[in-house]
Length: 141
Length: 372
Image 1 (tube, rainbow over the protein chains, first blue to last red):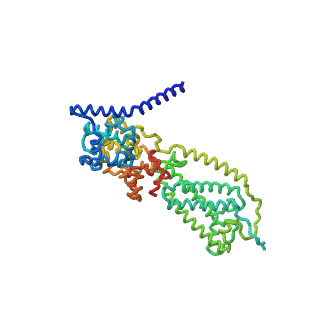
Image 2: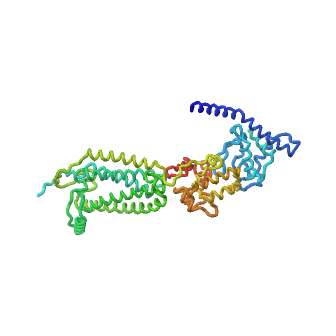
Image 3: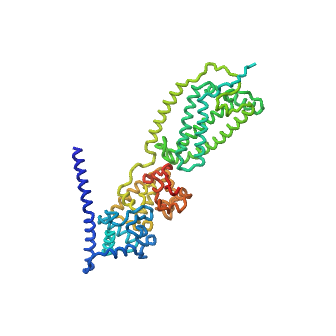
């Protein structure tokens, strides 16, 4: 009885894990689609996201956020391929999707961190286009 | 006229000599680590203290079952006899004893008593303040801090007694024209052999008692030391807390801040040490309750009590602003915290291997290699 349920549970885990690995790019695409749909709400002529614009957004020093965090690079360094470090000293996995494949695959997590970090670095809410550009840039890194 | 033995009379048996020199070694190590060493060397101090405790136990057994001059019965003198001997020393006409003279005997008992008291107070301090050892399950922090002064005073008294002991050995060696320190090495003294009157060492019985007693004592004490310490919660970090807060920094033990600090901190997550750490409102409420339920008030450990007592009222949520944190880290240069191995003052786990548990045991401090 116990053995059978344990086996069923393992199979479920296995199936779940395989599904997750297979769907990471799909999950990321659905997040991009979500932001694209939001972008179209305000701009009917929206053509698509730009990795170059995302890079510029990532490297900018807007000067409108908190003095402790003048830019994304404060914690994430100037290259998405580097490991980052929080101000409290914790190591951060690279932002580049090629090095951290699970990045931008969980909408709730993506929303949470855009909400927090746009606030601290830019001092405002980021637009759907900015978010989509950012993810597109990271997905190409 | 008494016969003089040319080759020397065996006085101090191997049991006495081993005890004496092992005690010298253990006390030296305990004193050096206790008076001078850093906290991270606590284990060496504890090993020396444990050795002293074992040696005292062994000496009591040997005092009852050992050879003639090892037996307490051979050097228990009445206070009157001891005073009379002291007077005769002052008058420069004291007699000679092959074993302990009355003053030396008094010193033996006094040293054993003071050493036992030092070990006992040490175990109380260890149990109360460090929450380790056999008394950890029973000793409040306040009892530990109240006892550390006694432990230190007794240790200073011991240093004075050792000095007096050495002075006595030097004086008697001169007076008797015999190197008494050497006699404690070889066991032999000059003089006429005194009749042993049927006293002989019960070597096997003593060994058996020491072995059985030692195993029983070690087993009991270890079992006690393995019990959870008094006021040391063993509940694990809430998994949501560990994940959400651990995303940016060490998931600090809830015992490191009092409830009021946690409440204030959770009320302003959007302004969290210069950053926005906003959480979903429901989750934030739940984590706040968990933090308050496990805050420093519910701990009786050194970091919890001392941080709570020294919170900076202007910055009550910053652990590193507390007087205790500042005092404990005052010798660590700013460059050490800035080093890439550490990253910040808030990275407790860079050096405290047990930071997540909230214990912060002295033995768990490991400075990163390139910072040593």
